[in-house]
Picture (cartoon, rainbow, N blue to C red):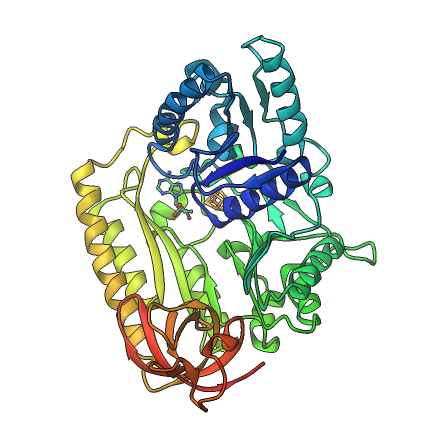
Length: 468
Ligand code: 5AD
Ligand code: SF4
């Protein structure tokens, strides 16, 4: 009899990827994915530890699930609750103690052992013992990727993520990743290329290569050496049908020349780069242990723009890092004005237990953080709108991913990750402009689009012609 698993994903794209892999791992064991916890036999919370109060959110979710679990128990049925991801990694034993409703805690490196964990939890539960709880958050020497199934049969879509690298050795003083995801590890080139081929065979046109520090990639190549990210992109570019390659998240220090050149030489390498700077003040960059100055960051951007003049940039910012003065914050605004990001994410600093910055005596008051965040976001939004407005009148390639709200309209992404609503058809009969093809035939395709309108978060365009 088939069982159901509901996976709730918090946080980054890496977790989205991991949730898919957990579903793949469970499928041969009879688990179908469910849209809600209500009819699920197993609920997995795939957690994120970056944001403030992450653990508290997980506990309140578990509180809600516990009620459901107790109701089921009165009917003689089980519902298993598993906590996965970075909160599990960071606070596993404490979670087990605090929330008895949790059956399993698994860290990001142990997903492939999920079926075994589930089996031992099930066996012991049915044996009538209620202490059948499993904690598995170690960092195995062998890699989880070797054990994950290769059949992504559940996959549907045009744009996919592919994890190529995990962990981080940078130890920025605000960040939990080196503790929750462990040391930097790169997958072998062959495994990545094989996975990419399988995705393309299923209709994927765009792949985003994922890693916490993706451009530190140094996976084994087939000649006994190791490849850089630029080298890997060149390999992936050879795959017929793979139209677009992206990668995220990069560290400025690892932006080597081979990768810069890939933006110049490889057409499928998209002219868009998420390159977090966090702060525009040298003093704060140093306190953050970012390992680069603002001038070095500008120099990297100059090199990138020389290689690819139409490159658009995105970044992450933290305001109110311990010790940040008004002048430091002004330096951040100044950096933003100089770079002019197409898009950006900005956060108030939040102390993460176990990180060096969390014990600094120079914490910035909450109201100062809020005021700085509002000013920074106003500036970033202004630039984002300017960037979008600059697209009006231009033609660009759009990868159509899903249906829009209106008939005859499809929704896709520009090379710069802007959402584009594309009018493919005349809305009355929902056929394409030539009048004889259902407009949905364009789904999953790259098309040439003329941009006619821009807003802060999306563009509107008209179909010019199909490309593939
Ligand atoms: N406080 C605020 N923002 C943080 N980030 C990471 N750790 C913290 C923290 N302690 C932000 C950084 C990072 C993004 C993924 O999350 O900007 O680039
Ligand atoms: Fe965290 Fe990124 Fe710094 Fe690594 S480089 S410690 S993942 S912020």
